[in-house]
Image (cartoon, rainbow, N blue to C red):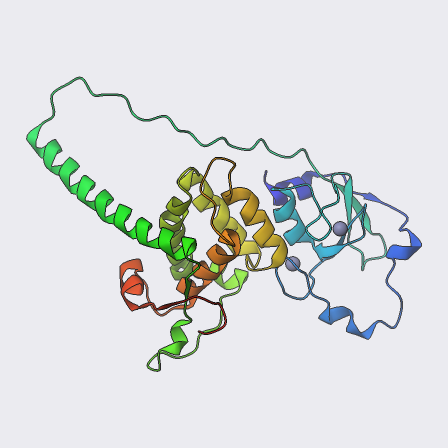
Amino acid sequence: MDWEGEVKAHPDEPIELPVAVKRETGDEDANSERCVICLMALRDRTIVGVCGHEFCFECIGVWANQSRRCPLCSTDMSAFLLHDLDSSTPTKFYLPPLPQKKVPSLSLPGPSRRPILPEERLRMQAEKQELDELDLQVERRKEIYEHELYVKHIASNPTTRFRPNPTPRQIADNPELTQKATAFLRRELRVWSLVDVEFLTTHILSLLKAIDIRSEPAVRLLSEILDTPNGPRYPHGAEHFAHEIYSFLRSPFKELYKYDEAVQVSTSLGSG
Ligand SMILES: [Zn+2]
Ligand SMILES: [Zn+2]
């Protein structure tokens, strides 16, 4: 669903706000209120009609593409959202139907009937070598998740300077970060052997550009995406995954293999 398009095309209607929803006057901390999805100050404060929880309009939009349960209380929020709350005419936004979930395709290419040319054979060998190398890397990544080994903050290396986690906007605006995130996701998602890697790479990348995926609601969302009923499950898998992607993004390394060589792991999050 194209959220922006939906919003523009949607016939929003002005409504009377329930008293409880109206902001009390003299609320000096209004600007410091944070959205639990992006962990930043609320932008276009939006309220879930049913439970009254507040998020940025854009954040809850990204969320609503995934799930119709409130990120905070899991109540069914499919009815409507209230936004433009700070204007004189707040609007009621009816959520469009949830898009169909894509089912991962497990079909494999059929056997080829024509003879294989020598140059084709060479290319296939090179591809197979690359795949074998990728398999090895994925096996190592699986161990990280199985044994709950967290990559230590690269700044624990005295020769590198501290780098904060990039914000969603920085990831969206910086092609290098987007590229790093894509490369990381393509490999890391193989750890969850049954998921559709290409589809989820695109999908999680768009989440990363909009929200902070270490936030508690985002981790729950990731867990719904990754922990499929028949797929592998890792202890704190989704939370761990979020930690690992930001560790790579804020590291000074552009290439995964260089990062792999440099990182140290720890059995807890706090000791980096
Ligand atoms: Zn937000
Ligand atoms: Zn709620």
